[in-house]
Length: 322
Image (cartoon, rainbow, N blue to C red):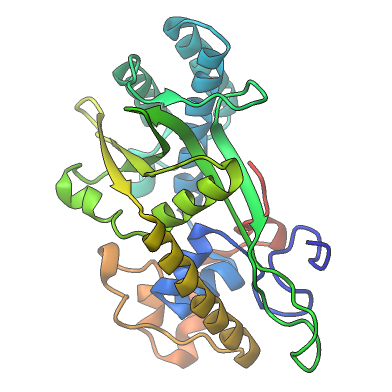
């Protein structure tokens, strides 16, 4: 990591990404233009901060609760302290409730979702793993070198900077005598088989399984995906599904990753990230669909009208720990 500019995920003086996480890898696999606009240039929708803040606070609350429970506190005490901490953090958070994002994701819905979730899983069959340091395995940041990377010499034949795989694991649990990653997702869509089908195969869940095995040297079988459906009037709904990964699937994912990173390096060297127009309508439509549908000469005008370009220090950065 010494060759990296402090807190920069890119090779110094280039747009060759060195530090990767599941988000940037997923964008690259979906569409190179999406990856360029979001991960290289830092463009985000104007209401994107609502989704980000809501997710961060939801996960932070679950982290607080699991930590308190691991310390031996009762469920009721842990819930009270978790809510107290949450209210303190969101005191000055005022999302615009007239937007679709703010309509579903606001102070009240966040508080209700946290309380509903903690009550629903108060007798959770998935038990949080306690690490050797005595702390619960929740909200774990990881970062480790891979065995290959782009060449750093002018001829391309000199030393190379290893790629770095980074990310965060929500929780490591023991469920039915199996060690699993538990990943929490919030959604406004109805939970059901079709919603859970999206996680198998899935880049993020495969990467989490791989990282968990490498970092914690545990026989992690896969990921328990915990869906939390946000409802405006009815009680929030929760459901879990399991997605397993075999050794062969992890090996294949890692092999494929080498080709994807080579492709990203070629885009960076050419200074061009082509649009994958077969992905524009997937998952409800790409956030940049309205921009990319315009003629190339006017796209930047529409981009600046509907999106915000974050300063470097605020952009998504895999090297930032939680």
